Image (tube, rainbow, N blue to C red; front, top):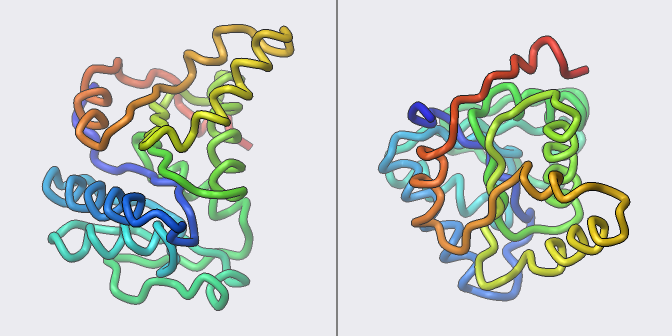
Length: 194
């Protein structure tokens, strides 16, 4: 795949109880800045999402945050990023994040992270796009999700092919080599989504 210019990160709006996840978020942000990959994310200044964005900015990178107006107060939009876009609703946020990104990286998170992850995998399964999706299963955080998906396959509510719509890595160092090894996307999502 050609160089990734922008990477959408889905992750928690809380920092979580393990400091290692916060260190992970900082490391991912530093890596992105070093490789001149723009961060596209949910725009908040809280949790892992805020840590990633701050790390990218502190290391000289670029960040585009996208946040709905109703979350601008509760998630406290990040006021020290390159670009902040306030949209009307969650659907606009998701679409804009999707449109502005070459690939997707999932870090530890909660229900919102799950929602975004499953949605982007579903869109890929429906052949609405073929952008890379990478789950960073740091310290086995996402094992329960992967077990659930394997259970769904085992019960034949989906096919094993579903598991091919995303990639799993265990460390941030694996992310970019994996993305660079993948084929160029061929589907034009402008003609398929929404």
